[in-house]
Length: 565
Image (cartoon, rainbow, N blue to C red; front, side, top):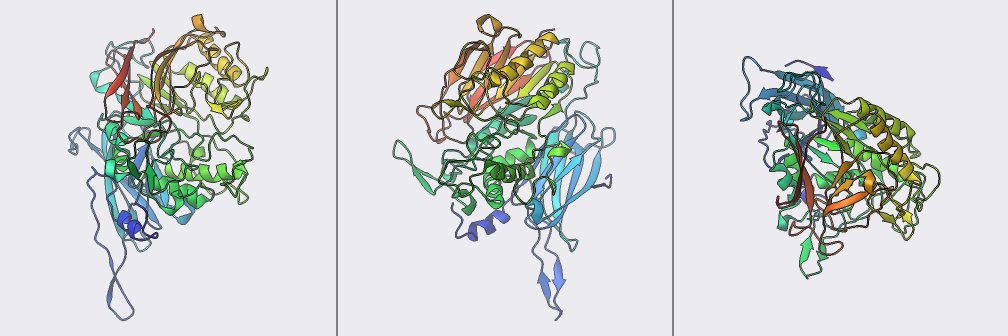
């Protein structure tokens, strides 16, 4: 990168052509660069097909001074991004506060499915940017451009409302301009419910977008690679759900092309494209980016698959996910050699911390890559949900965080029982309310270390189980008592079948303060009443207001947390 400082696819072609000319985001103002004329040997002017942005644009992992900028080109070309500081009305700032930068990024090629990312650093904090992305072809012609926006986080070292510096772990006030909000959810296009334009597509993304959040945590199951879509599905009440369908989503994903096609499919939805252009993403990955309830080393017993080795599938699924998610950690950015030609699974680190100023740090977990085999979970010794390296990292980074709130973005819940068959468990809860066993021992160690290190104001956020809930964990109700009380909030799905509520495991003393699920398992997202996302508003007084909302935007539960000093 060089900083210059300044429904079905009609047999694969008709809809694809239409998509290629669609705007990157429903609410983004796009500018089209005229096609560049060339000359044939006979001197007749020909028109070169300009590069387009069929999946729109996105930003991700935005901190106080950096952002990842993402897009996908229709063909090979070099990515260029233009950043300009703007006010909240979108007017470009002049004089003090002015900022403009043109960044020439990497060349998008077939090797990355024509996706590209720019890691933009040295940005001013607490600043809104207008973003414009385009690609330049090998002949030097600039293609379609798309516009979006994002705001960098407040500066961690800024002075708070009571004159203190170095963060607000003491619970002091912060300036009004530093307050921020965010949304989270998971589970997109699952259980056969894809993009149905008759109901407005994946309208839950529109509801999240309308809250005007500063960022979005996608808590995993960003795609359902193991869930084929059909043109029509007859719902329980007799209504017919009509999906858009592409070749890649018509079967379980096995090839890299099919995994990539899952991500391309979701970005066909105008609601998602519009939100991603305006709201930075922090992405977890979970199981359905590969296949249901998978763990490293597993061999499938599923007749739908010609490839039974999960490591091979996971390598392909991981590559497609990394290509399409705007994540910042350099070791997680796809590059040749991350996966060898034999499909050997070589995990790169994707657990990471995203600093969001004095009020907030986000700790994004990876509860899949280092996961032990799914068993009944009652081993007398520690088995993995995070792996020792990630455990050590989590304890160390959370303990030294100076932010008031430490949000742990998890792709699996803690106390909810998530079965994998009749006996085995998918998450860490094991149906035994006694002392920690198996994977529970790993989490017990984390919680105990937080208490020992006097860590306050930790909140766990997750999705996965396809209903929403608020859980309070306390040692006074628990078999394991060496931890401080904390909250876990669950939200989802956002565009998938509904399930739950599930039973709880009592080891860590959870109280179900609230839970809401669909009317029956697998219910479609049609009316939005059984689809959920979470919203957090951080107040000037450092309060943490967590609300659970349905896909129509209605709040079904809210809880205000006050920081401990």
